[in-house]
Length: 443
Ligand code: LLP
Image (cartoon, rainbow, N blue to C red):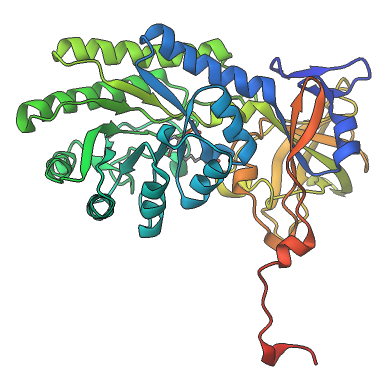
């Protein structure tokens, strides 16, 4: 097993995250529970921030893509680390506002922003909206006019770069619901349209080619295409590129089938993008644009583990062996959605040889409710603490109450001590919005 700095095995043979014993955390907070290492998250934010500072003279900003893991505490950390955030809904915007996040450093995304979300963003004084439809431009223009202001926007464009990742998380293929394609001329048309509006100020372009991508070349190619397109727009429409937002998407380690990139390795990815922006600017006689990147998964993904207690164990002779845990697709739907792979370990006996081939199942009434299919563990017993690694991104943020299971709490570990950043849900929380009409009430 490969472990990152955040994960260690202690003298008791227990897994540690951020200096906290996972078995002790499971006892203190119960299971299932999401655990995050604060030091790792901060380190990753700094790596990206400092790369822009050192390699691009600070002419840009790192936005934490908060869809990966959104709660008030993470926005506080991003603010303390002096980076920005991207939000994709009124809900994320509201959470950031509640956390006191500076709204000027917030960018809003989404392929179908609702009218009220645009209104909320403008009222909040959001820094920039990334428009992805004509109707959005109209709405932003109209709402900005009502408020006597001019709103900064970017346009989402599709550079047509295919990246090797799951089809559901590719975003720059020709049939994508995101963006306007450079290739078919629609990106040019919407540029002209946005330029014609009085109450929006078009600063530039945004692209995001997908997620969990390891090929540096795909990212670099996207930069090349966006910069050349911007140069073309200067010639044809007199448009000056001020800002270029390259999205996120850097892959992380889930299993040994994935590359393991060190934090410094991620800096190299960003540097490769920066070098291409500089090269293209020079070649096309353009000013260097303000550069924006939006990593989500690579900031929080490997900073997180999920802890479970092993329950029922069932062996189907000659077929397979199930080890069931007290979580499931309601707190990690990624196997059900993408057949994602994970590395599970027994946190209370990490050093024991993993010789037993098992499938980790959840507790939902659904055969596809799997956390990890066909993985090796030491012979598990009921009561063992199972840790699934690299669950910091897109786990809590995609959790749901299927089967009316409670969404687990989130714990932030600092200097070996854990504390709640999201409290456990209660059955009462799940019932809070239920209404029984008078005629159905039990009298
Ligand atoms: N910017 C934009 C516009 C995005 O759409 C995304 C992710 C990001 C940034 C951050 O990408 P990251 O650095 O996290 O790869 N639920 C899926 C992932 C969906 C990603 C959606 N967009 C999963 O669990 O794999």
